[in-house]
Image (cartoon, rainbow, N blue to C red):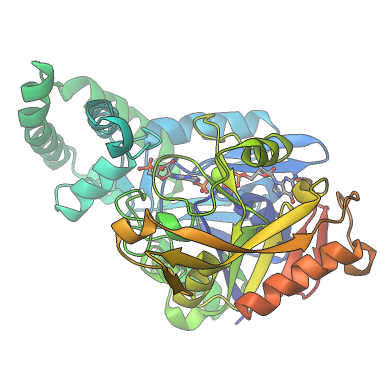
Length: 429
Ligand code: GDP
Ligand code: IMO
Ligand code: MG
């Protein structure tokens, strides 16, 4: 049993897609288990860029790619993404791509509600969602109104379900917009997509059992990051799914017994896209510089990402709650030109020192970060593949993080390309 879960340790965009692609070379299957096309994963392979939102990042290596039941899936978007990736020369067919029949469907009305709600909120009350209908689709799932792919087997009952979802939301939409959304067009559109996608739909929990029984290697690919988790994140400025490693089981139907390695991905600094607290944010020249060198613009919405220093307090909670037993440190090269590099080691809130992340939003909004300052290396690390070839101050930076969080850094990423990595420990062989 050498299956692996990969999850983000921050607010997403840690470089998960790149690392999943790297490690997928050793995998027999790659599984998405939560989120939807709010995710944006960029892979750079021999200067060619692949942008994935719903398709598991293993698809680029033509590995068996599975979308688990925990994902909310927009069929219109998926068809488009399949077309785009196919046009880039990747063969997607029913033997290398499978969607769970228990997967919930994002309908056009979910996207509409997502934008409408955000537009109604003012200033800092806006979550800053990706506007892709993720929250409303998960709400319908939890309210037991949602539509799953297995529901498409009975078209009459499916139409009834559509009608009841649209009726439910139209009460509110009519109040604010003065008009209703009719279900008929959307029903036809989604039905057409289903017919095109039906060849991929299957019982994926069973497929995972069969793979595990044959000792096949399964890689579970998280989307978003720990602090966007609906339970453990900076609520309400979060996404609507659990992004912690434990959701790899619930969101796919895989047994917890399948797993032993949980790999957490963290940038060498921190970014966030959307609103909400960000203790180490550098809303100044430092943040601008990190963003410019790191090319910190959202893959999905193109929004500028907020940038700041690495936060050890946050990292420690993410490691504990997700049971992380190995880290990947990405984007080390982005720090190459900084004279001083800061790491936040504790917080001051109302004149008290905290070593652990506080749960209340009001505390989170009043954090004063306490920093340790390390000397920068002012040398190029981009593309380095051997730890000993890193400048001494870069080695010190990596070692200091390891000792502060008490967890191994197994891989360091030194550039966006597939082969720009320092492999310290083999994590998946
Ligand atoms: P994900 O959502 O976690 O998969 O991350 P994204 O793909 O949204 O954002 C990470 C961005 O950083 C992408 O554009 C990657 O190509 C890029 N990237 C990943 N690792 C590195 C690295 O080590 N150095 C640099 N400079 N860029 C990286
Ligand atoms: P990847 O997988 C970064 C953020 C949004 C917003 C909040 C809620 O690429 O790391 P949602 O549309 O999910 O209801 O938005 O979550 N968000 C992400 N931020 N990376 C992501 O995914 C994200 N997915 C959602 O910006 O703040
Ligand atoms: Mg991303």
